[in-house]
Amino acid sequence: MQRLCMLLTLSFGLVTTSLAANEVGTDKKPIAALYETSYTDSDGRVVERGRWYFVRQRDRIETASGDHAEVWERYAGGQVSLRRLFGDHEIAIEYSPGELAARGVVVAWEALGSVIAPKALARLKEVKTIENDRAVLVLKGQLNGEDVEIRWLPREHVPALVKRTGPYGTFTMRLAEAHSTPPRGWLPSSRWPIGNFRTVDAADLGDLEHDPEIQRLMRANTGGIGEPHAH
Image 1 (cartoon, rainbow, N blue to C red):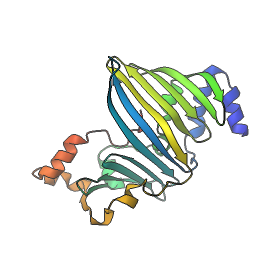
Image 2: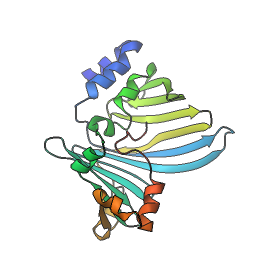
Image 3: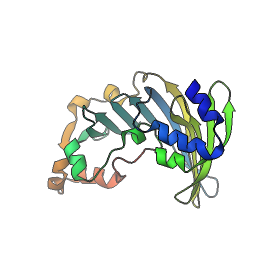
């Protein structure tokens, strides 16, 4: 409670800097969050809706949307591995700590566990604080040429709302549910037959250039590995 009050009473110029500095290198409380997402084009038409699951545990972070999920695990010494799951294809692609390093991927565990990178939060300014059943910091600014509004929950260390508006439309991600442990069926590992999945070592992807199924997955999932989820 004392730390929360400090965040709420700091001046505008220091609030987001304090958020970023205090979160680096710390372990956040476990949380399971369900977000509803939408994309509205510049004419105001909703062209896409979805659901995004985020589960943070001490040494495991799992996200899922549609038939695609990512499972990050942290080991003693700070090494991190990634498992990308494709439910419709029943394929798992595994990236060992060594493979991630070989690809030049530097995993910031605090960024993965925050949904939004602390550096991005530090570039926004607090415009107001809302206190109802929970404290919410409203942060606004510009990132990558977009107007950004974030409603941040300091105690849970996740956003309640992310709204990004650019020249082509608006992306919105709104917190729908939050729990201390994931409800049954939220995690792909509990609703998909993971044990029956075809497992592919990411180090072998270069040898599978003639495998049409693997190539389709790679073309459809071109997002950067290790990037914070909502940034």
